[in-house]
Structure formats: structure tokens, C-alpha cells
Amino acid sequence: MPPPRSRIPAPPRIVRVLAVALAIAGASLIGIPSAVAGNGGAPPPASGIGLAPPPPPTSGPAANALRALRQTLGAELARAGGQSSVLVVDMTTNTTLYAAAPDTPRLPASVQKLYTTSTALATFGPTARLETSVLGLGALTAGGSWRGLLFLRGGGDPTFGDAGFDRAAYGTGATVQELAANLKAAGIRSVAGAIVGDETFLDALRGTPATSFAPSTEIEGELSGLSYDAGFTTSAETALQPRPALAATQAFVAALRAAGVSVPPQTPVFTGSTPRSARLLASVASPPIATLIQLTNAPSDNYFAETLLKDIGASYGAGGTTAAGVGVVAATIAQVFRLRPSFNDGSGLSRFDHTTAAQVVSLLEQQAGDAPFVASLAVAGVSGTMQHEMLGTPAVDNCRGKTGTLSDVASLVGYCTARNGDQLAFAFLENGLQNTDLGHATEDAMGAALAEYDPETGAG
Image 1: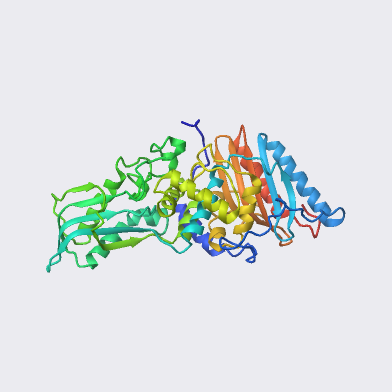
Image 2 (image 1 turned 135 degrees about the horizontal axis):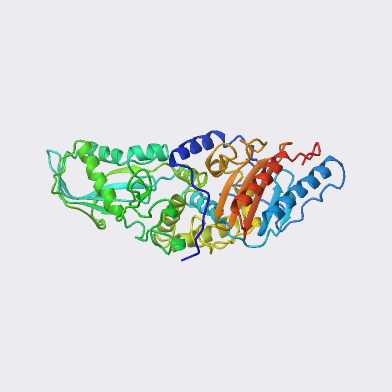
């Protein structure tokens, strides 16, 4: 097992609903240039990364602003201690504003989620959805009785669950009530046969490399191809289901009865795999991938990130495993974005994930014109894990990004608009910290300094 670690507690799931709504509404407000290539295009030049940037100003307001900014960033890094990497690039002028060990690999913590979600966008596309389906092996009588087996087949949708849970947790999602209603609409009024839950779209390992693949509430859910209410026993999210697929199937039976479909009390309910000969009877779709990555990045949800990683492996790799997903993410990030960080999981809980500040900023530059990606990020003073950060500064409702925390790691990466309107991309990766709260405070101060930066007036 890796050494114990801590992180900033995730916002209550009900807060995440507001975070997603605000992200959708405000994605276009930061003015990220749409001319920058997104997933589908060739990467644009990465300022300060392998290219000679324009020479920095040596006099006048611009030089004064740059000097003040660099002094502030350097002082905050010294205050944090540990080993840090920083890169700040002005995307508008193609200028490196500040760099400190930008090519040194660091633990990213939850910044790792940006690679996972960028891969989800590049592979599935922003409009794709994950389906939970009911298939049958049998026949429907003229009176509406299904005689034979029903299979509840999971498709790796992290939102599948009770309508009340989904409404409070996400403000959206695929609900068991909708699936039951869809099956009834297909003409089934009663069931005479067993109901089988199928979670084989993904493997049966409930955890990640950081938990030795064992279940853990640190993952913020329980990994399964057929999970229900994120695998928790109650909305309090304090205990995990011992058998998540069986719990989902039992909830489906209850939903059928509530919808007016007769399911006898003695009906066998168990788990297994769906035969190829079974035919589709009904299904319910997840929100689009664009929404799923918002529910991943803004609140920094480990469960969503790790489920999406396995979904990527199941759909585009060797199978629904963490290792297969990691393989696809590594290949996609290398092929599409020409970057080669080290991957071990999808969420950043693992201490075998490594990336550089230069790699993160390059990803941000290449994704700056991708509206779903930008909308998925938390907003300073407004939403997600940045809701209470940089308050009382020009960074509020301006800077947006991704935070990350382990026991000795504090990370903050993203975009800020400078006072003169220039668009900045930045990565602060602090490792080896004695105090991560102090680390995040220094990163907040650095983010606020970026929002204050004004080369036209000399403010920095």
C-alpha cells in the first residue's frame, strides 16, 4: 500500500450540481482564443517549451510588470518550501512569463484527471453517452408477461442510480426509475423469470493502484461496470455496497414494482453475464461525455475519473481495466498532444503518476479552444474545488483550473485572464511539502498575481 495521504475534501455532491451549471454558463467568459487547436487539430506552438520565445521587455511598464510578477511568484514558491515546478505562459503573446524547473517530473495529484478527461473527449467525443441496458432471453406474451431471463447490463455509467440521489449529487444522470419506465413502455407488464445483473463491461476490482485495488471511500465510490448510487449504501456516502452489481439489480427490481410491473417476491435475483443471443428491450443513457468530465474535473471526483478510465479501456483498449485504460490514455496523450507523462491511474491518487509543468501547460494550450474541456474546470471563488479560493482578488470568476492534493503535494493548473486581457496558461506543481494548506495558499497568491498582471500599466 502507498503511504497514507490526505486531500482537500470533495465538496458535498449537492454542491457539484451548481458547479456544473456555472461551468456550462461561464465557459466562454474567460475569452480563451478559439483559434488555438483543440483535440482534433495539430498542436500549436507551445510557448517556452522547446521554442525560443520573444525576448522579454527590458524597460517600461511591461518590464516593470514582469519583474513584479516574477518576484511575487518566486517569493511564494520559497514560502511553500519543498520541491516545486512552475510554468506560466502568455498565450496571447507567445511569451514565457515565469519558469522554475518546468521539465522536472512531479507528482500531479488530481491534475492527472486532465489527461484522463482529455482522452475521454478525444476518444468518445463530447456528445457520446454510456448506456445501461435491459436485455432479454425469452418471449413476451400477448398479455405483456415476459417469460424468461432479464439481464440488467451495466455500461460503466458512473451516474446510474436513484433519481433522488442523482438529482442531489449531480443535477443530472441516468436513473433506475427511467429505465424501469422504459421497459414498461416496451410492453412488459409482468416478469416470470430470473433477473440478472451484469457488471462485466468492467472488471471486478473495486479500487485503484493507490488502494491495492481494494474498495476505499478515498475513491469516492465503488468501481463496477454496474454501479448504483456510486456504490454507496446511503446518500450519506459513508459505507460501500459489498456487492454493487447485485445492489443495482435489486434496486432495479424495486423500481419495476414501483412502476407497476409485476415481479413476484420469489423472483431469483443474482449476478452473471449476458449471453450474446439476448435481445435489447430497453435502455437509459448517461449525460454526454462533456457533462461527465465536468462532474469529474470541477469537484475533482476520483470515482468518476477512475470509472471513465476503465470505460476508455473497455471501449478503445484491451478491456475494462485500469491498466487497459492507462494504456489508451498514454497512447492518446502521446499521439494527439505529443506529450509523454507517466500514468498509473486516472485520478492522481497514485504516487506513480508523474508529469512536468511544461507538459501540463502544453496540454492547456492545446485544449484552450475546446469548450467542453474549458467548461469542465473549477472557477476561482465560484465553483468546484476552487469555490473558496482567491476570494477578494481579481482572480474570482476569472481564473479557472484544476487543483490537486496528496499528503505532501499541492497543485494548481489552469487559465487566468490578465488585467490587460492577455490569456495566461499556468501550472504550479508543489511536491515534498510539510504543509499542503500553506502550499495551496501560496498557489492562490500566485493565481491572484496572474490576474493582477498588467504589462500595459506596469502592475504585476
